Length: 325
Image 1 (cartoon, helix red, strand yellow):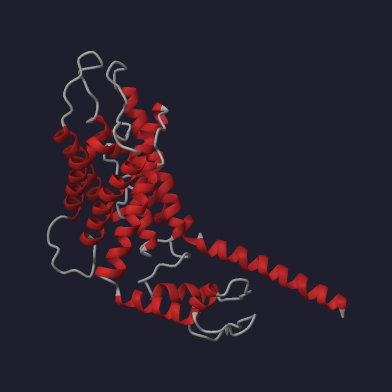
Image 2 (cartoon, one colour; image 1 turned 45 degrees about the horizontal axis):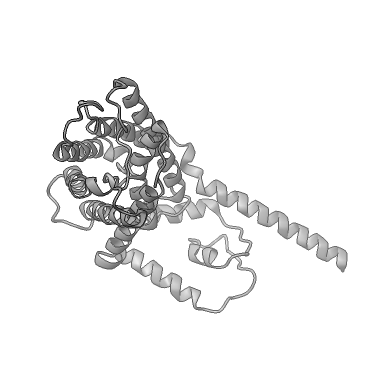
């Protein structure tokens, strides 16, 4: 009897490891496709160009001895028009995120998968570093200055800076969600221009406060090149929190998707029900797999039909699962 128990436990352990491996493979299945890498490379290139052009407007060509007055309108317009141009150029290829805060907000709103978001953020950060590096190489050393590194005003605390970044990123991401809402029929203008205006407004308001980042990668790139890391966390935490709040507020409160709302209602209703047991059997003849059941019960070993799971995903595009990239 003891030997049989040991044998059964070993089989369960192997099955559990197999299911974990299959889950990982499913989550990253689309990574090896050409459209996926086109989208990732588009985010890299868009961020590179955006950082190169926009940070170039922050260079003070008067030098350290005779610095010229900071032209806030010039900088704001350059950042706004640069991001609008990149969104117009790459939006149909990658979605035109060009901002880790936007990408994280899209994940929370189930607009893209977690797998895609990881590669997007890596590409965005790398593009920002390369863009800032190119600007550093082509700019005379006498006028490089801080290369557009963002910094919290000396009279403000890091907490104040975080709040400012949260607010301006909130308005940016809310603008993105509202402008790109497929459920709206009243949007007739340029989405890219609306996003660009939002970035310009954020700069006009917050340049003197924090440098008006609204974009963790934009702050990360020049910080790497110049080696200046003071309050760098402010430009990650603030924009990401602001972006997530904006996306959640728009998608789940102001303009909720009916299908997404129904799925969340089903999830919470099933979570309140008593467990059906330690194991759940999935019939191969079923037309679909109840993914909510599989998610809500940790420690359960499932054997599912991957092909049927992919069919389910194809039919229900309203909520992109991890296997969708």
